[in-house]
Structures are given as structure tokens and as C-alpha cells.
Amino acid sequence: MGDLLLERTLAIIKPDAVKRHLTGEILRQIENTGFTLRGLKMLHLTRVQAEHFYEVHKARPFFGSLCQYMSSGPVVVAMLEGERAIERWRELMGATDPAKAAAGTLRKQFGTDIEQNAVHGSDGPETAARELGFFFSGLELAG
Image 1 (cartoon, rainbow, N blue to C red):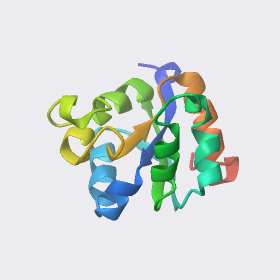
Image 2 (image 1 turned 45 degrees about the vertical axis):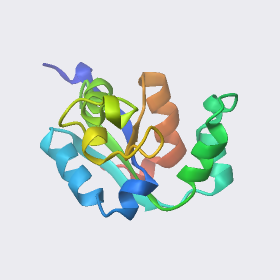
Image 3 (image 1 turned 60 degrees about the horizontal axis):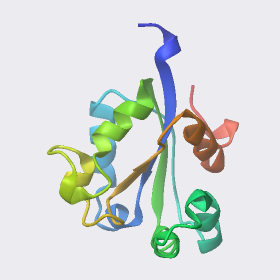
Image 4 (image 1 turned 135 degrees about the vertical axis):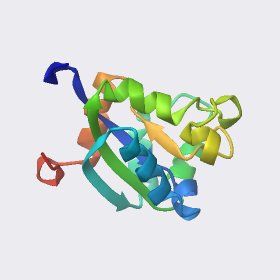
């Protein structure tokens, strides 16, 4: 398979997972699944930054609680690269609701509810480009 299938996507290890010391285990599973880490950092979003990142959900009833939660503690953001990275990362994450997620997925293993579900991932190429640009500059990317 050629390089044309290589994609990059954003992964976020959410505040609940960071607080429960799951960062290393989640990163281990990401790498063991064949992804290459091209960017990685820990940061603490402000409420305004969280609102800007999730602005596509502004009209949704969960917007306020999501932004409050995502600014409640540190997160780890990563740029993942690999063949069909967006699709494969979404498969590894599992369904948004951990109760409905497949066995072996990160959300099934580590999520506690539909909001505190351990990880976030881009849902398509356009979203991945926007989300990666939100967190990473060219100087922060390896390779």
C-alpha cells in the first residue's frame, strides 16, 4: 500500500483519563496498534479555548458541560499518523458511550460515561485538519 493512504488525525486523552494516570497505557495501545506519534504534548485548556475547539457543537445541549469538563484538568493531545488513521483511531476509541463500546476499545476499557469517555478523535479529514491546526504548529511535528 502506498503513501497515498497515510493520514494524520488528532487524539486527545481527556481530563478524566489523565487524572486517573491512564496516559501511558493509552499511548502504549495507540503505538501497539501501529500508529506513529508525530506530535505529543500536555496542556490545560482554558474555558474559552475549549469553547473555541468545540464551537461546532455550540447549539447542542451538552456544549456547556463539555467545555467545562474539557477545561477541568490537563489533557494530552497527539498527532497520529498511519494508513487510514482516522478510521482506525475511531475503531480503537470505540463508541462515544462506553456502555455501547465494543470490548477492547479504549472507551470500553477506560470511559466512565458518555462525556468522560477517556479519549477524543477527529471524525473526518476536514475535522482532522482543523483540529490538528488548533493544537500543533509546524515546528512541533516530527517527520
